Image 1: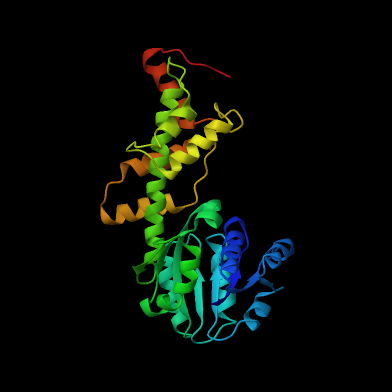
Image 2: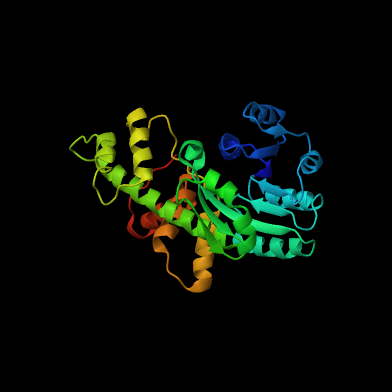
Length: 298
């Protein structure tokens, strides 16, 4: 199958490589000429602009956008829509908020352009293992794109979720669960790191991969990280969030669904990014004020 592909970052480059290996015709664009050159080495057709990319695709054209969420994606969708025509398809494979998918689909429909949202999971391992794809949009349009999804995903690794926004909605909840799982592992391993037994944490993580009810790919990656740096001395405890956890909590608030584990996990990430917490300094000040408890000063 033929498609245009915009965005050759860590995931994008691996995705076009996987597509090219399965002999799809992939026309690529990225702001980085070096990344375009790398993609051409994999057999892709490089272009120097969105307009050139559109011109090298046969109608009806399919364009996959894989750029950072928010403004970069919005700007790219708008720019691409101006170059496409009725019957063409835009696929957003990034981490877009599902409300934006619904709006974009309606706007593009006025021009006759189809819109498909694809929640994409797999990270930097997708090239080797494939990507889990959660797809939203018009059922008939999604069926036309099956060859692409089958190449990118492992066996049984992609599925149609429903109408516009459904793919990114499911991916949003997926990432919320991911936050919670990671936090659970992190807290458990911290507890064991302070045990009087001097436990081999990498060995334990590896052990739990064999028959344990808490085994997972995240745990497998944890084992590898601990083997490389058992005390994680090379890292700072600064944890960023990409937005999906926040969106999941907001959706839970709208639906009156309790998500305490996810909320705690997200707030822990916020705390990790504070060099010093005003709230905790105030706690110390209050304890000192009412009970004369000792405080530590700079």
